[in-house]
Amino acid sequence: MGHSAASTEAVPVALVVLAAGAGTRMNSDLPKPLHPLGGLPLIGHALMAGRELEPSRIVVVTGHGADEVEEAVAGLEPAAVCVRQEEQKGTGHAVLQAAPALEGFAGDAVVLYADTPFVSQDTLARMRAARADHDVVVLGFEAAEPGRYGRLVTEGDRLLRIVEAKDATAEELSITLCNSGLLAADAGVLTDLLSRVRPHNAAGEYYLTDLVELAVAEGLSATAILCDEAETLGINSRAELAGAEAHLQSLLRAEAMENGVTMTWPDSVILSADTVIGRDAVVEPHVVFGPGVTVESGARIRAFSHLEGCHVSAGAVVGPYARLRPDAEIGNDARIGNFVEVKSATIGEGAKVNHLSYIGDADIGEGTNVGAGTVTCNYDGVMKHRTVVGRHAFIGSDTMLVAPVTVGDRAMTASGSVITEDVPEGALAVARARQVNKPGLAVRLMERLRAIKSSRKG
Image 1 (spheres, rainbow, N blue to C red):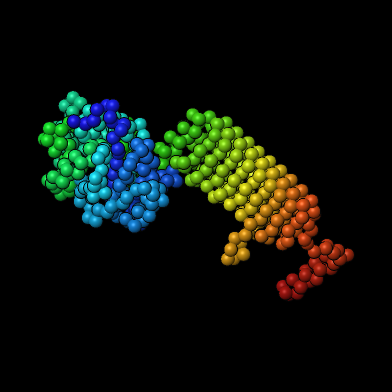
Image 2: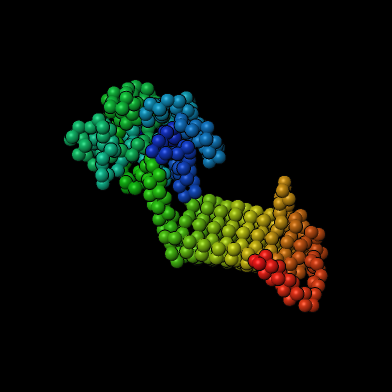
């Protein structure tokens, strides 16, 4: 019967994540577990929640699109072991495929689903705690519209069985307590009971839910832990994915504002699941945060900016209409302005890149000013090269910095220059042809062109 309350925390945990389904209603060549939600694949959300249980084993059951799913899992959770469900014979059959990977494991197994991304860490912890008194713990919820959900048949706090909607009687269909699909049990008990599940149902599948009735028949104890229905939201179609994205964005924005972030129009801001924004930062309307963004306290992200894979330090101002690409590092109190793109570059403390510039594969020193229209010409058609600009330098507008090139501390470049050689510290580099004025030539040239145009009309 379960574990003692004192010993629950010491019992090892294995996660079994089901990610084998075809997801036909998604109408997609991309396997359902890999569809992004908040910039993170669906399966990443299940792995992230489960990680808080500090599992000693993680088993992912793959099937449809197994190669792609397994590649993604390797990047998200390198410690995970993937096993394949070659034939889709139901959830019970899917969990049973994990049995060889659980060989020799003594502890609890927690079954999660790749397409159920909102189950909270707190809910999983409560399921785990309930194992102190029960052999099998199922996650349930009170459904507003029970419809197609499996029903939990209970007696007090005891769970007697789970009945799938298509196999339920009229009386059982009146039950509103429904099954999420998640459960926790001793790993040995789980695999032993599943080996005895038979496909005696309308779909001819091996149901994971039959495990409860088998457990009760063995004299084991089963119970249901309840959570909010929103946590059990499963994703089976593009419309449900869009609804899930809207729900996640609401959660992420609320959390950010609770943590002291100012959003002047929250509903227009798009966040990623891993976005980190510090206290007293300000996010203006229509900002998009892709994966991997950290914004420090007191920074300001101005309207219509797009950030991904970057770090913005305290007091910096980005935008409006700026684009920060992966490996952009923006220093304290730096300024990145209108229509500026930064990629794989470090912008030093207090430096300014205010207008219409591209800074890629570069290091811009503290206090340096980069004039409008500056481009670091970092690509030669085969390889990328780096530009280094020192501290308190001044880069004139419309400067082309042809990498690899270095501009020293307190150096300057003249506007319109094409810099192909290093500029020493304190020097002014002028790299443009000398201006020549031809008196009266503009007027004579225009008269000639008009005459040619007139003769052609004739």
